[in-house]
Amino acid sequence: MIQRKATGPPEEVVEVPYERLDPETLRNLIQEFVTRDGADWGETGGALEDKVAQVMQQLRSRKVKVVFELKSQTANIVVCR
Image (cartoon, rainbow, N blue to C red; front, side, top):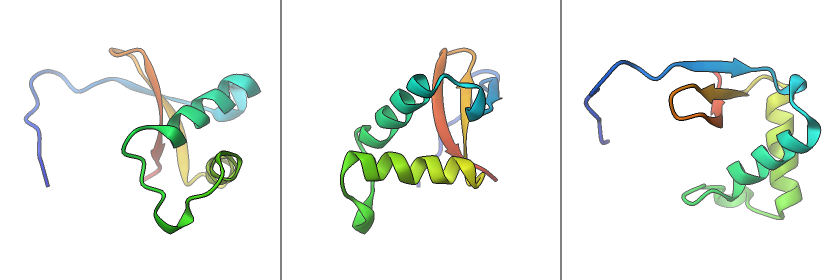
C-alpha cells in the first residue's frame, strides 16, 4: 500500500446531500464516477445504466455519499464510514 506524506493542511471536504443536487447534475456525476479510469467493477460489471442504478441505490441506502473538495473544486462519491 502506498502512503503519501501530508505536504500541507488536509483538504477541506463538504458533504453534499445528493437529494439537493439537480437530477441531471447527479446523473452526470455518477456517470463520470462509474466510467472513471481505474474503476474496478469486478464481476458486477455491466451496462452503464446498471452501474448508475447501483450507485443511486448505494446513495439511497447511505453506503456512499457525495462530497465536494473545496481546494480542488471537485465533487466525488466516497464510501461512508
